[in-house]
Image (tube, rainbow, N blue to C red):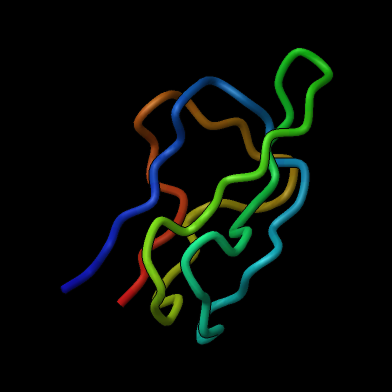
Length: 71
């Protein structure tokens, strides 16, 4: 079953850490967001393989926007 990772707030994508095909464990960093000069890591809530990354560095995400999908 696929696990969608979504943004929780409006933020800039500072760094994309994971890439398509990467195996992630629970708690691994997927991307780092920046909001109000704070760096906010977005973590995988479950382990899995990254099947897609929907954002790039410099993108602006809104709350609820899809960041990545883990399979």
